[in-house]
Image 1 (cartoon, rainbow, N blue to C red):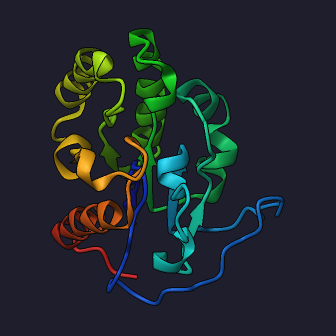
Image 2: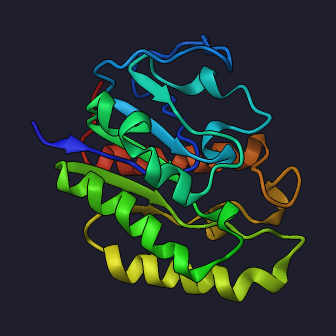
Length: 197
């Protein structure tokens, strides 16, 4: 079976299978198992300030961590992604890298490692920090590189088109409405790839 990875901030798999309201405590040690879906990345992927567990299938493991950078995930990719042998990974990473263009190498390593393990990917583009729009040109440069490098190889969710300033709770993290808009985009992709739980 072809493995699938979706890299993004947060996935709402509403209506795509059974859901669970169980959320693991922060200090719970995750047991490596065959998880069909991994949500990896930073606080947006984790669902910062949101009840992130309520929209996720029981086949999903959230390994995303608040404040995580691309180099931290790249260095821990086995524990956070590969050891679970997922079919689908949802990744959102990069916003905590302080717009360092050199960190595209870390993002490249994460994506290439997943692809080399025959995992299909959905990748969220790096979101704007709306109260620091002086960083927007550098974020655009990173996203333009990302799209050029991986167009046709991964599925993209274009964060800055989906979660505008008015759909954030603090100029970065999506509000409930912002996550709902992301959910719509993820579901479009899941239907496109004929994903079934």
